[in-house]
Image 1: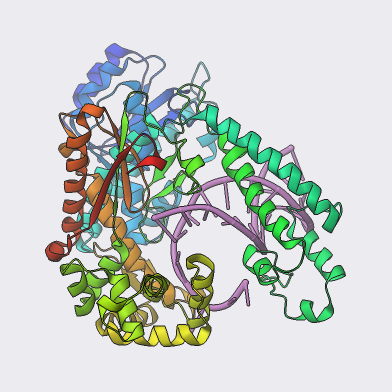
Image 2 (image 1 turned 90 degrees about the vertical axis):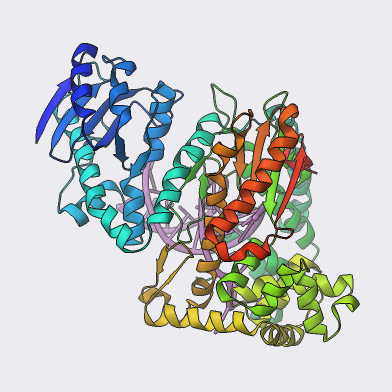
Length: 577
DNA sequence: GATCAACGCGCG
DNA sequence: AAAGCGCGCGTTGATC
C-alpha cells in the first residue's frame, strides 16, 4: 500500500492527473459532521485497485484541483453520503458505484464497511477513528491511513462483488439503484419547504386540546401518566371486574394491552373515549408537532429527510429524520408541505399498484382481464363475493371488497380480515362473513392463489423469495411457521418499489428544459415542484415517466396501463386535485 | 446519563 | 390482540 498525503492544490493537481488515468477509484471522505450544509469535508481519499492511495486534505486543497478525477468512475460505501457532500462542495460528481448496495444484493443484509470488508476481503478495518476529530488543525497519520484504508477496501469490495451481482442476475436492479442515488441525495440536499408558521399554530391547538383531555382523564383515572401503558394497565386491573379482565387482550410479554384496537372493544367504559382522543393528540403533538420542529434546518428552513436505498427487506425506500413518508393524512397537516414560493406541486400516484403487480406476477387471468378492460377490481371482487353481476354491485359491497383484495394478497386470515374491515373500512363483517369472502376470492382468482402457495413453498424449501428484478429475501429459522405473509408480500411490495424507482430515474431526462425538481416520493407516489408555466408540461411528463417506469419492470404489462397513473396539481400536498 | 427493549401508532 | 406486509419515531421503564 502506497499512500500520499496531499496538502496543497499544486500537488493535488499532479496526483489528480495521474489518478485520472485509472478505470475506477475507491473514494472515501471524512467530514466535520454529517450534514453537508453545516459541515466541511476534511479528507478525501482516492484509491486504485493496485493499492495506490492519495489522501487530499480539503482544508488546504481547492476543489477545482480535484476535477480531473471526476472523469472516472468511483466506488463509495453508502455513496449517497459522498454525493451530497461533494456536490454541495461544488464538485461535478461522476456516476457512482456503491459497495454497500453491492453487498446488500449479494449478502441479503445491511452491513457496515468493516463487516463487508471482513467477509469479502478477509480484512480487519479498525473503525475507532471514525468519530475522531476531523476539524483538528493537523491530521494524525492514523487518521490519514484510516481514511485511505476505507477507500481501498471499498474499491476492492466492488471488484469482488460486481461480477457476483451480474451472475445473480441483479445487474438491472443494481444499475437502477445507482441511478437513483443522485435523485434521492439531491432531494435530501434541497429538502422540502414547509410552512412552519402554520405548523406552530397547529402545535398550540394540539397543546390546548391535550390540556383539556388531561383534565377529563384526571376525573376518571386520577393522577397517573396517560402515556404509560403499564400505569393504565394497573388502573384497569384495580378498577375493572374480574370477568372483563379475564378476556382482556394481552401484549406479547403478558401485560394488559392498552392499544387503541383493544380500547375500542370496551368503548362503553366512560374513560375510553377521552383516552382514545388523548392518544391521538399525544401522537400528533409529540411526533408531528414538537418532534417535527427539531427537523427544521437552521440554514434552509426546510425539512431534509434522508431517503435510503437498500435498507429495507423489500427494496422499498426508507425515509428518516424526519420520516416524511408517514405524516398524518389530516388536511391541516399535509397543507404544510408547500412548494418553494411561486411554484406549484405536481403529484401523481399509481393506482392499486400492488394489486396490478400481483396480477402480473401470478398471471391471474381474471385480475389481468379486469385491468386490461379498465374495470374496477374492487367491484369485480364484490361481484364474486355476492355472486352477482358486476353491474349490480352496490357502493357498500364494493367498500366491503377492498379489505378482501388488500388483505388476501398477504395471507390475511378471516378473523384479521373481519377486524380490519370494521376498523379501517367501516364495514360490518363477521368472521363467518370473512371466511366466505376469502373462499369466494380464491375461486375468483385461482392463479393468484396458486402463485401464493408456490411462494410459500419457495420460502419453506429454498428459504428465500425474490422481486421481479431479483432482490432476495432470506428466511431463517426464526421465521419457521410465520413466513406465509412475508413470503407472499415481499415479491409484490418489492416489485412495486422497483416500479417507483424505475420511474424516479427517468425524471431527469423527461424534465429537461423545465425547472421541475423532485419534491417528494412515498412508495407509490411522486411529487414535483415547478413554476406554474411548466405545470401542464410537467404533469404530462410525470404521467409518461410513471407509465414507462411500470413498463421498465413489467414489459409484459403493456395492456395494464389503463388508469394506471393519476396526476394532480395544487398549492400543497393536501390540495392536489 | 446513555442505551435498550417493549409498546404503540403514523403512513403506503 | 389476533398468522396481512413494510417502515420510523416517541415514550416508558429497566439496566448499567
